[in-house]
Image (tube, rainbow, N blue to C red; front, side, top):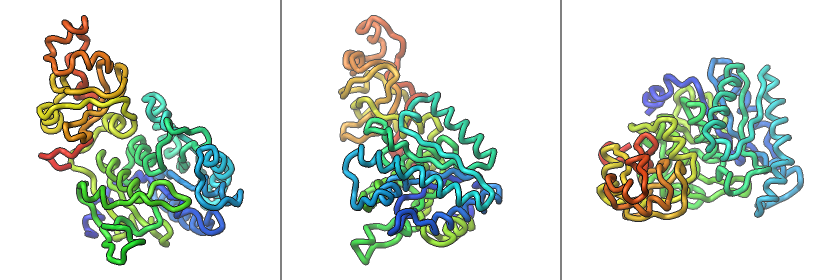
Length: 383
């Protein structure tokens, strides 16, 4: 498998590294030795010509330690307050560590609404590109102090996957507190088998990852696997690796068998369709019949009103909406050309009857294929 790793990493120049709370923290808050070790490696990569983007957890954990709080924080205000205390210290630690190597860092705090707005999405991309040109390492975290459920990423694994799309990374390294992916939880079973390579996503791969977390983490292995699925969908390989292991980044770049490697999918989403599929939140659901499902998955067609059998939720023109088959599986997501009220009136009808029913016909498709992203594995191409 070493040759495969070397082949996968051969043209890597832009690397997104996500560092989890369990990696950065120890019994006394932030583990400064771990931070210094990772920063030394990252600085070495920057000096070799690699562009590095960091998505770093640790603000809440740092704040909790500073305030002598143990156990989980239950409410959003508590988490926001802890993040407000800890974020400054987290950046100060990173800044001092990078300065030892003559490098600078930039703090970027985001909420989901920053990425769902297309113009702000592009502005963030331009800012990150400029920072990397200046050899400044962007350190990105969720803006926990202002985020609420409606604008939260959920966890930094999800945030990192979105940023990987924004910067068009060549590699996504997710540093965690385990060796990688196992077929069951190694903390609960001595028979847990390590999985060094995932060449394609199957239902089994998604179900074996647990959502269990520590008192300082939020995502668990399940969120890391889902993040890997998202980035590999746009052609970015992903490696989940042990962040506290010495020279972990150096070994990964050298092609050594560290962590679990997720290979890019064969059928890759373009950046805009990735943005639709994985960044935007659905405002409703369109249940489609078998013919429409086949047309979307196998033929790359647009969604017509004739293939829709039910509508769930309330949405406006241009909103992101999920397409669901008869079994309840989400197969696609797209931007609709009609409101939910209008779709309920024309569903099941031929396009020729749209104007007769609505009094106008601005579009023939409920979702045009250019604004439609397939999220379910294509049964023919097996992405």
